[in-house]
Amino acid sequence: MITGIPQSSGFKWTYRAYVTLFFVYLALPLITVCVFAFNDSVFPSLPWDGFTWDWFFGTEAPRLGVFHERPILRSIGTSAFVAVWVSGLAVLVGTCNAFLFVRHDFAGKDFLYILMLLPLIIPGIILGISILVFSSSIANTLEEATGLWFDGLRPGLILVILGQFSFITTFATLVISARLQKFDTSLEEAALNLGATKWGAIRQVTLPFLLPAMIAAAVVAVLMSFENFNTTLMLVGSDAPLTVTMFDRLKQGSTPVLNAVSLLLIVVSAILGLASLLSRR
Amino acid sequence: MASDKSRLGLILLMAPLAIWLMTLIVLPHVGMFLVSLQEKVGIRQYETSLANYAVFFNEPLYWNTFARTAYMSITATVLTLLIGFPVAYYIAKLTRGRTKTTLFLMCLIPFWVSELVRTFGWMILLRETGVLSSFLQYIGVLAGPVEFLYNDAAIMTGLVYTSMLFMVVPLVTTLDSLDDSLIEAGYDLGGSSFSILREIVIPHAMPGIVSGCIVVFMLSLGNYLTPILLGGKDSLWFTGLIYDQFITRFNWELGSAFGFLLLGLSSLIVFLALKLSGQSLGKTMGR
Image (cartoon, rainbow over all chains, first blue to last red; front, side, top):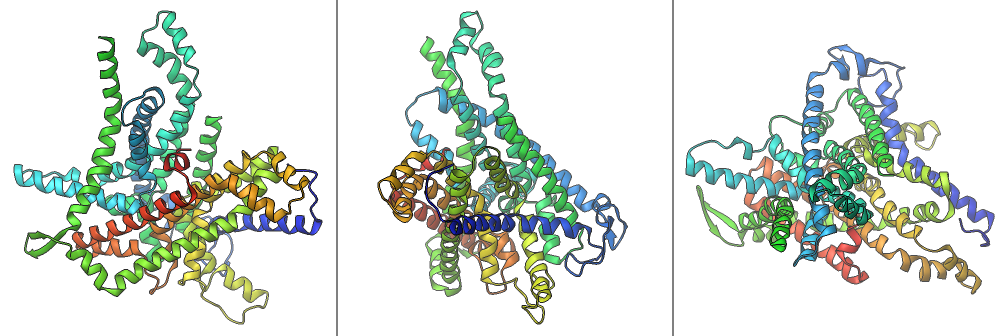
């Protein structure tokens, strides 16, 4: 805190009011979404018709709650499936990349590093269409050549997983590299002096040190995968992940069941997000 | 012998990176560029030409939307910087300890939530039967319900909201590393608040400002949800055109050309921002 600098109290209070207003602006949409999950009306808007749990536990048609709405439950399952694959692959490749960039020097390293960062500045929708165009042309070529079907290369969950993996890996690499840079290599040398093999030293000394960062990267990857929309939209097939299902509902106009789903998402992402920060400490 | 072995290890370690970047980033973009150069001349017959790009330049709707998307994204970036900077400065320099951590976390939490949920929140707030309209009627500012949704101001509100974190976090990080005594020295030497801001704080925060601006601009330019859900019938967004060509009209050649134009525009602006501020991509993004 900077003390000893003269500032009028009027300025100080205006500044505080501004910062307070900013946080109100940040919280307002989320609080609104949560509050309307309990509104006893079939539209997520005013007037307020009283409190209800129907949008969570309702069992009958116009007031079907989240826990009884099959399409939404199924799309949550689809999202979880995609997220687990993306997160696992991203952490695996990210860990290899971290060792490569932190521990090795080779020709073209700077170029590869820039290339590795590129997915951050390519708009998600373009990542999606480029992968769509590329995989379809491979599928066409293969199908013409062999006469077999290659459904895995057509829009569907495999492409969704690959599309999300293509940019989430960059984040995983950055998180894990940051931790590997802090590692004291003399610990690994000590293990080697004590008779460990190279791989044994990495497995028993370096990887345990990296574990918090790997967990943090995995959690961040799950969060990013769950909430990804742009890339997913271009690659989705018949099994829609949660964001795509919610988007369709939102365009048609929906009951507050969407608010209930959102409330659950907010709670789970806040918990996961905090967990990822704590595990990085 | 040992160097052969370590060379093999290096190649094995590089393999996942190489496969990832080649098959999911480099080749797809080359492929997309090639498709964008194909002109359909008959059923399953194509010729290489720039026809798809000519379509873009000859149809005012397309390039107007392109220009509008760029212009609105730049506006959103500037607004995000202006709104976010004082808050980042407050968090980095005027708070400490637990308050600082709490405020920082409060900035982070909204952005772990899906963009869809955030946009949904703005829809409930701004629609005709929504919270803002009802509140203004209640306190007597408005006589009847007013639709705040489906216009450019609504899109701007959503864009600024969605990208705020990506501005505030790099700003807080760079401002945090500015030594307080430099600011105090500036005051001791008789500088005014404004000159200290201009000559000490902003130059030091430049890497954060640049990386924040780049990310916010990219996110706005490539945004699909916010303009589609919060914008009206006239508020076209370039990503919406790309989606239409790919999914609705099934004209992949034109869609690829659009995709490449958007990628070109975003790369150009990122390049200019880095050049003008003397920063490098590795330094601003790799943190």
